[in-house]
Image (tube, rainbow, N blue to C red; front, side):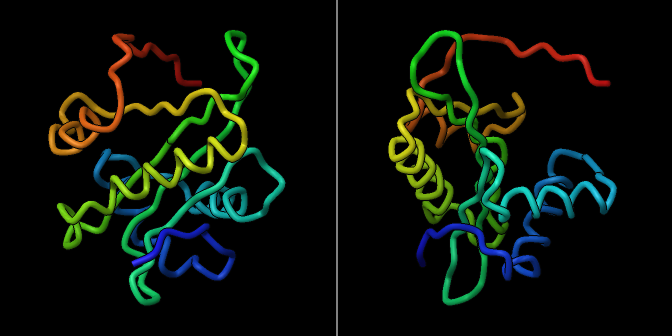
Length: 145
């Protein structure tokens, strides 16, 4: 298994994992949103991208990230927005390897921080996150338009 950037030809392998991620969070998106997301992740013109766990040509995990400025640091922040591993491949360290690869990408780009959110009920993922990250203590608030 290797971790590599998502490529334009990966849509068929990416799509089931993306849909699985959305289903996990009980969310549906219009097809045109997923189309735009994939184009943004692979187009190279946005401050965002994706990494995949590739097992002999089969995509078994995805990590989407985006970079943004901060008022608190010189280096950008890297937001790990989406992380998902195929259900039949969980528990093998793939999620951790994807996160470590995002860390490496953020370091390469001069970022000062990588951060992410998860739902409070996502206990299995939090076991990993507690080992490889630090809880900030902040609570997220939002207003959806």
